[in-house]
Length: 105
Image (cartoon, rainbow, N blue to C red; front, side, top):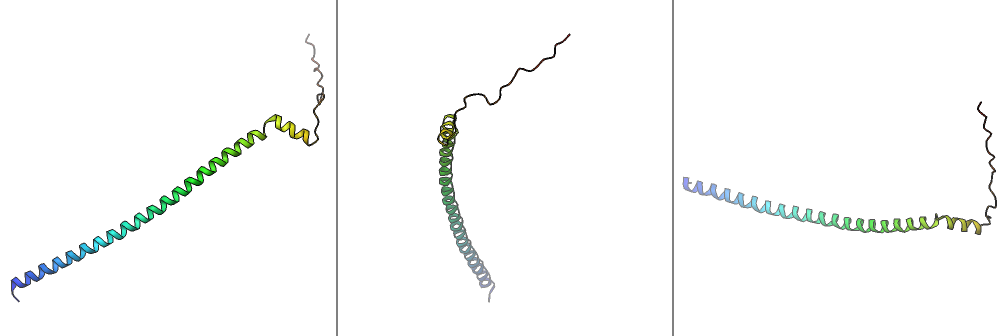
């Protein structure tokens, strides 16, 4: 083989290797892009579902807060007590007498 043929053969091998490496890098980049896009889409769907669940829980907390406020109202408690047989107080439970104070001299 002549020197010219040998150089041409080396350039051809380098060109083929470069072309193969470029095609391989292109395919790998497409596969990685699809993988990360899919992963991002899945996480996005999960975030949307979690956000909807959070909104529902906040609404439930609000409703329960209103129920607690309504139930803990003193007039409602008194009414429930009367329905269960409690009677209103007619006098104080304990009569407090004035305390005896020692006289100072």
